[in-house]
Image 1 (tube, rainbow, N blue to C red):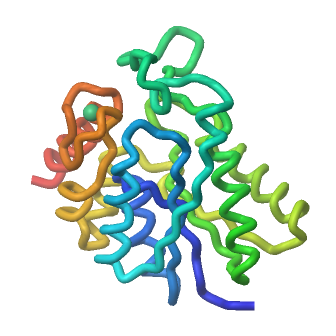
Image 2 (tube, rainbow, N blue to C red):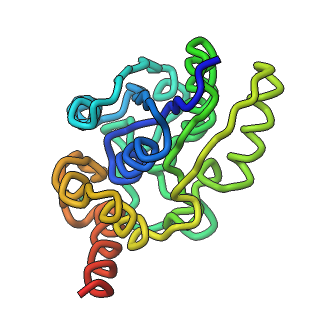
Length: 218
Ligand code: ZN
């Protein structure tokens, strides 16, 4: 069994990039795993590859197109107009049902085959839209399920779970990657790197967090 190796579920966005560098601080070796799942902005995978190269981290991509084929949402279907606000009593249509369930399941099998037991995922319960598969209860439950399903002692790490976006920026700064995260990641739902389009929900959240962090700092 390899020790001190972590597999990061890595999209090339602000959160998972911060997690990648968090993992680099804590593990001797880090492996990044990205997914192509029919997302509209597949260039995020190329940006992820470039960030992994700069970080000196082994990079893999798994192609899981069935996730987009299961249903329709604003991240995978170009004909769906993105919700800019969260609808009453529901999630915005940027929710990709089951995405983290599939990602973590696939990541665990991938890790098992390489003798890796530490999984890192950049989900946050304090995220604006409250996607159910970003919550702590889901991740803990999934951790138990994966350990039972594969009979492995996986530990799922969620360094951002209780951080808001300003605190996630603070963590990137503390890790010495503020500029890289700010300029070279892709969080925008409209596929524009860095500060993004400025008006989609992901950009708003990212910008408000950045402003709050910079205000508090200066
Ligand atoms: Zn945007």
